[in-house]
Length: 140
Image (cartoon, rainbow, N blue to C red; front, side):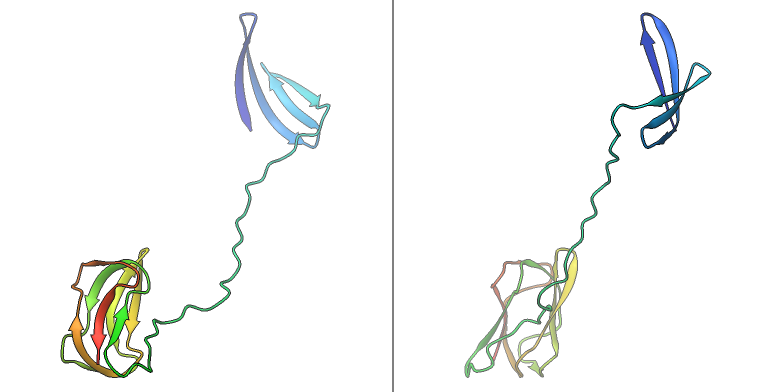
């Protein structure tokens, strides 16, 4: 198992731990075998296992206010970097169309259209960092 080297009163000792079961340890000291009984049981430490519970609620897509009659602003749900922009001013979108991809915490998040409409403004560019709740796209 393990080998240790000791020096006691200028005498060198090489100790090989052969096995360890309960309170008895089998050793070899400079070629001679010994069975050593420990006065107390050695507790084995285990690496704790992290168990995470499942999320209480499923991830939801970005929701925009469908009751708004005027301009609807699509805001960033989390801070991140815009990876791709799939719309331009004047595009007509249907519900479920992908507008852009936002990278956050090394994950790509598709931002999809929740309300049909026409793009009136695009306030971000590819590669731009956005903060949470920052307006990215405006729909009418």
